[in-house]
Length: 58
Image (cartoon, rainbow, N blue to C red; front, side, top):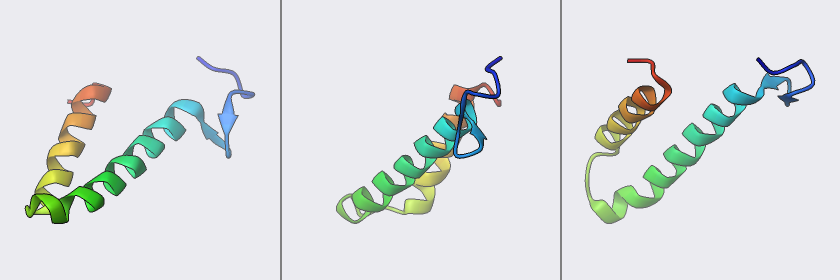
C-alpha cells in the first residue's frame, strides 16, 4: 500500500487516477459522439463496463 504521502488533492493516488481516467473518457465521448452519430449513453455505459472489468470489479 502507498503511504499517506502518496496523495494528490487529498485523494489516494489510485482513486485520483481512476477519476482522471473517467473524466478524460467522458470528455472524449462528448467530443466523438456527434461525429459518430450514436447514443452517447450507450458509449458511456459500454465504457464504464470496460473500465469496471479493467479494474477487476466484475
